[in-house]
Amino acid sequence: MEIDRIDRKILNLLQNDARLTYQQIAEAVSLSASPCLRRIKRLEAAGIIKNYVALLDPQKLGLGLLAYVSVKLEKRGASSLQGFRATVQAWPEVVACYAMTGEMDYLLRVHTSDLEHFTRFVMDRLMTLAEVMDVKSSFALERIKDTTALPLD
Image (cartoon, rainbow, N blue to C red; front, side):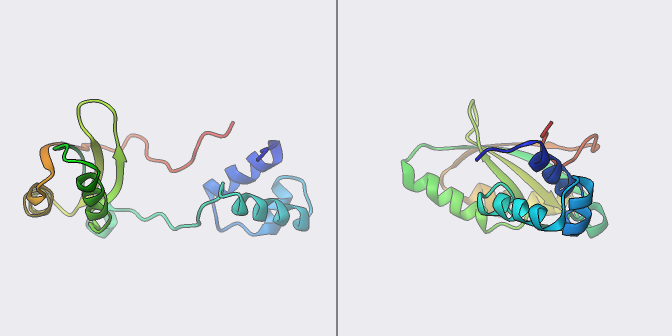
């Protein structure tokens, strides 16, 4: 699908505030409401706009510890990989999981309330999986930049 300058403006506006009305977006991109709405619906139908969400502050919700966990699996075939992937989906502490190149197989972004909660998560959940061979954790000390906005310019 071809994305033009106006589509990019619309996407940037929605990335910054998805609660804007169609009329507000239309005015910002110099369109009338109907063509603007058609563009947004086309972007949604193409899957470019995947979802509309509220971004929450983990600190204010008592999730003050952010950890990045690298996981190496024993290679026992596709079933162990699929089992790991399915299990990770069920853990609420894991907010992102990426298959990686390099030494480790997966990178998890994990939010917990504190170090004790994180320790229980690693010891009672992650390390009990038979396919997990190695785990390395790093803790975020400070948020320098944290955005969901993609670079569209």
